[in-house]
Length: 421
Image (cartoon, one colour):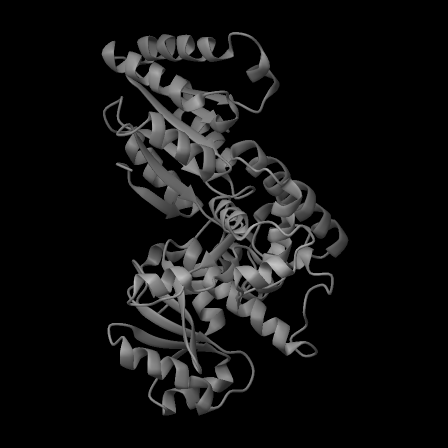
C-alpha cells in the first residue's frame, strides 16, 4: 500500500484531516476506518459544521442513497459547490456500503483531476475490510488511511469527567465504547446496547457483508471462543475443539484474521528470531475492547476481591489491547518454562511487559528476565499493583501500575498515546 496508515484518537484524527483538507485540493482521498461506535460519523458531522458552505455530507447508509441517481447527484453538487466557493469537501459516510464504491470513486476522482476541480474527499467505513481491499485494488496512490481506534482510559476520564483511577477500572470491567458509557450504572441496559448496537452489527452484518464467510455460525463461535479466552494462548486445534461447528483449521485462521480487520479480536503472534517458529506458534487471543468480553462471559464482570484470577486476565487483556489500539506491534514470548505477556515494538519503543495483579514473588519475574537476556534491545517493564512495585524494583526491573499504563502508556511514550475522545 502506497498510503500511510495511522491509528489515532478522535481529536488527533480531526486535526490531521483538517490539516490535509487545508492543502491544495485534489490531494489524496482520506479513508477513515475504525470500530463501530467510536465517533466516525460524529467526526464527519463536526467537519461539516466547521467547513460550512464547502462541505457536502452524504451517508451511504441513509435512505437517500438507495434512490436512483444518488451517486451522480453527489458529484454534480460537488462541482457546483467548488465552482461557487472555490473548493468543495465531500464527506462520504459508510462508503463501503455502496456497490463497487472504490472503482466508482476512482473514476470520479480521476475525472475531477483531469478537469482540475478543487474537490477533497473524506470517506468512512466501520471496518477496514472493504475499505482496505477496495482501496488497494482501485485507489492505489490516491488515498491515505486513518484508523480511529477504541477509546483509551485517558479519553474516558477527560471527556466524561471521571477520576483517572475510576476510568481505568471501568475500562477493564466494562470497556470503553463512549455510547455505552452513559449506561454504565444500568448493567442490563448497558449490556443490551453493546450487544445490539455494536457486537451484533459488527459480527452479524459488517463482516458478512464485506468478506467471503461460508459459515456464519462458525464465525460467531470463533468470536465467542476468543472473547471467552482473554489474553490466553490458544492453539487453533484447541480452539477447533471448543466449537460446535468443527471447521477446518484454515477456515478458523481466516476468521481470526477477519475479526482482527473488524477491530474485534487480535490474534497475537509469538515473538521469535526464527520466522518458521513464529508462523507455527499458537496465537494469543486479545479482545480489543473489554466490553465485548463482558457481554459474552456468562459469569458476568469479575470482582477483584472474589475472582482475582479472572480479573487479572481482564487487566492483561486491557493492557495488550491498549497497546494494539495505539498502533504498536504486539506479540508474546514463550519458551518453557518462561513466558512474557507482551512484546511491543513501535512508536513507544521496544518493550517487554509482564502484567501482574495481586501479590507476586521474584520467581514470577524470571520469564521477563530471561527474555531481555536473550533479546537485550527490549526494555523490561512490569505492570502491577502499587503495593508490588517495591519488590519489582528490588530485583532490578522497572515497574509501573497497570492503571498508569492504561492512562499514559509506558514511560516516555509520546503524548499522542491517548486514543479516542
